[in-house]
Picture 1 (cartoon, one colour):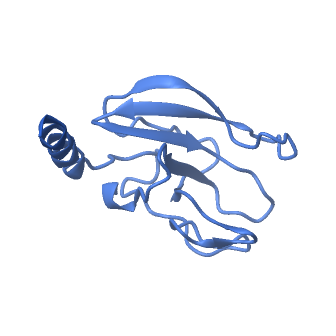
Picture 2: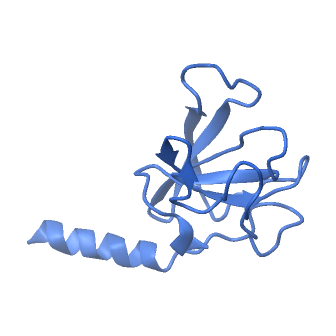
Length: 128
């Protein structure tokens, strides 16, 4: 019974969490819409997989903010095969009962953005 109570308490804490502004110049966390690489919403189709995060528009050179008090939990290697090394590092953060990763991918023609991905690969949309 204790485990259920703890889990319910944790879920209720996370339910009220909202990410504040992630990028300077984008106060409302506008999401990446359609471009030649697809859409930035969670679950959007990719060639052989589904998009596992949410893309928030962030202009090149913009300041990226922590969405709330977080602890840096380490570096994330985005592409373990090393084929897409333009920017291949992100960060893993924890705070407000959440674990998430922030990183960026560079492709010609893609809208500049920060990719937000939950550590458990669940949909981050409800936090925006």
